[in-house]
Image (cartoon, rainbow, N blue to C red; front, side):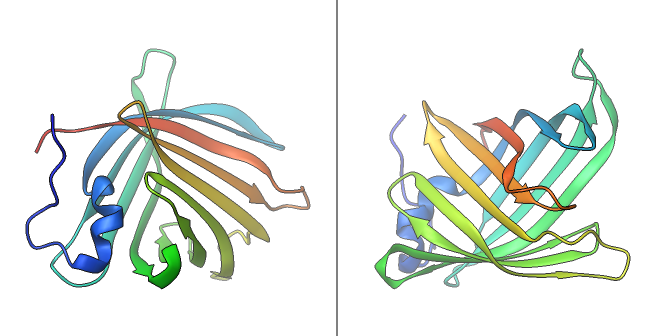
Length: 166
């Protein structure tokens, strides 16, 4: 299937056009002090013609048979492609955190680093973090590393998601 630029996409976003759509799949997570877990994930990137992508991710904890146990994290945000392959991302979480990310995009590979974060009084602070997104054999690969609770930066969550037909 040939890839086409989505209708009405702002030209600044052409390098990120491969992200537009809904992606679903499963992933795993682990971190010191947290039992290893499995999750289902749905990520949607869309646009309204302006120079940013709208982003929405939701996850559910699942059991070994892929049955949903309970809702997990939700993220909403905006992705801005800047000159020189720079990417600025702003995210907000259902857990009481907001984050600004800066990174680079190079074809179907995106690397982000946490620039600034905010935690509400009841939210959990993240000291540093990185994310990797990539198109691998037609799937959206995602990896999220974090530094929190006195632990060094390390792997936290990763998933592989299939594009859904619209």
